[in-house]
Each structure stands twice: as structure tokens, then as C-alpha cells.
Image (cartoon, rainbow, N blue to C red; front, side, top):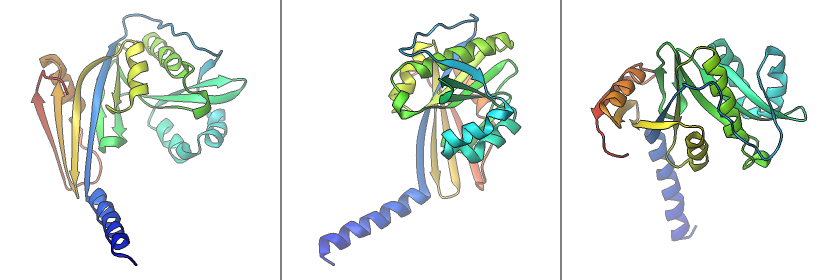
Length: 228
């Protein structure tokens, strides 16, 4: 093996080891007050939206294979799912959690106050993206939540997920802060930043639940009105 190949191989091995012991993630936190019962979003193609029922499980498993093992657990936790259909085919889904939810990206549970909901795991089949289906589904969910008496909706999005950021803004969500996660082996550190003092207090309450299996789990809440 040539020297350059050995160096590249070593770099790959060291990179894999580094990623296994060091993790870093930033999630922006968005909030929407549900003062209106309807959010109208136009799509480039006609879609039907509905709440998922028990008899939809097999169809979801066939269409969204990578989520198959988690669907049952999500429903057992009291979560709700709304799907978009085109000619009977599922092309999008978005999940909604109440009370508390586990955020995979940061390995931590979040607490939701009474009258609040968390929207997550939105997914659109690749060939149907760019048609306005995701914001349409989100608008439908917000209307559904309003009818259920929910006053606030939340979403957590990575800063580089530009498509999700666009349609979240489109339906009226406002950024209230961020949470920064750093994981070194079994040590996990979290740092919250709020856009305002009120937002800061909201984040403290939301991220105060420990989750995962780490031996050390520290939440550092810092009031900070600067941008992320």
C-alpha cells in the first residue's frame, strides 16, 4: 500500500473514532401561537390530508420503510400523525407530540406544558418535494391543534435545514432561541439561548427533562438575546 493510501486510511479510521466519541448539534427552537383556526397554504398539486388510523399502519410501513420500527412506539406514546395522500398514495407525513417528546438529534426529552404541542419528523417523498405539500400539511395540523384547544405549537430545526426553515416561517412560526448539544463519550452538555427573557424561561422548562443513557447530563441555561 502506498504512503498516501495509508495516510488516507488512517484519517478515515481516526475520523470514525472521533465521530463515535464526539458529537455536536445545534437545534433552533420555533414557537407559534395558535390564535387562528386556519392557516391557508396553496399547493401546486391537489392533496388530501388526514389523521393516521390503525389500519394505515401497514401502508405507512411499506411507504416509509426506515420509520417502520418506530411507528408503533410513537402511537403508543400518544403521538398523532397526519399524512398527505395523492390518489391514495402517501407522499408526506408529520408527527405531533403532547406532554413530552424525545428529540433524537440531541438525545434528550423535552417537556410540553398543557395546551402545547411539538411538531416533528416531517418527511416528504423525494419526487413530491417542492410542491408545497409540507407547509400545507403543517397548516392542516395547526388548524387541527387549534380545534383541540392547543394554544402553542413548537418545532426544532437544524440551522442547515433550509427547506424546513422556509416552510416553518411560511406558516408563521417565530424563532425563540436555540439549544446547543455537545457529547463527549458519555458526557453530554446542553446550552440554551433565548431570544428574550420570556423565551429563555420557556426553554428552561422545555429542556429540563433528562433523557438517554449517559452517566452525566448537564443543562446549562443561559439568558442571551443575541442571535445564534
